[in-house]
Image (cartoon, rainbow, N blue to C red; front, side, top):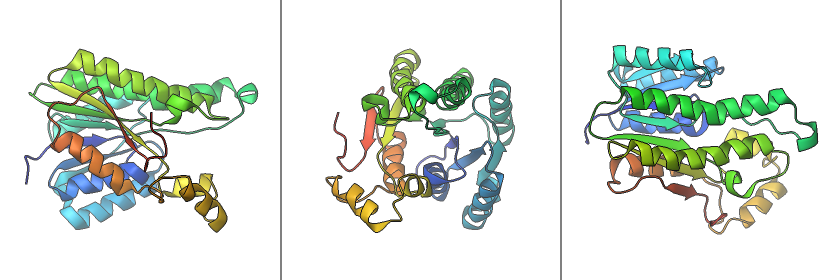
Length: 250
């Protein structure tokens, strides 16, 4: 087993984030499950991890990543329990769709605050505390931050910012901290299945037929890429890793 790290995954009570903390915990790392609103799901995940790996390697913390004081408190609690964070995965996000002409300031502000400002705040608090030789920030982006989509100007703008923020941080934080971005495609998660009504067979087959590898992605596909970045890559920073089965090729 490789050296144990302290890994914080924001927005990790479900979906991709839950798979990341579960995968890293099983490999012997100490992990932090962060959530803002989904307390029940965070508790369920904590119980499952407690049975799987024991309670000493898992910490659950509620914190809204868009609020600086809550993020500072979260990092302080992690430091008291485990020590300084080695790996930060900025996964927390929210999606509120609305046509551009009907979008409210509140809808714009909340999505930008969580997806972009939250990534900035968490990265800054992590980097200010990091004192070791090699750390990682992995941001979770979206291909719509490059090509856009209908009714998602807030989300697409935020994710475009995350991709550029990744490059800026890679320049400023090198060589001690490497910063990369993982960009998932359509994942077989509850959120995606519900959003696109993929429980309908015709809709599901239509979406899969447009993907060169002929299947939706899994959260484990994303975990394997994040693990590669953290465990294997030694000369990579400022890059975007597309995990989409070939659906989007920039």
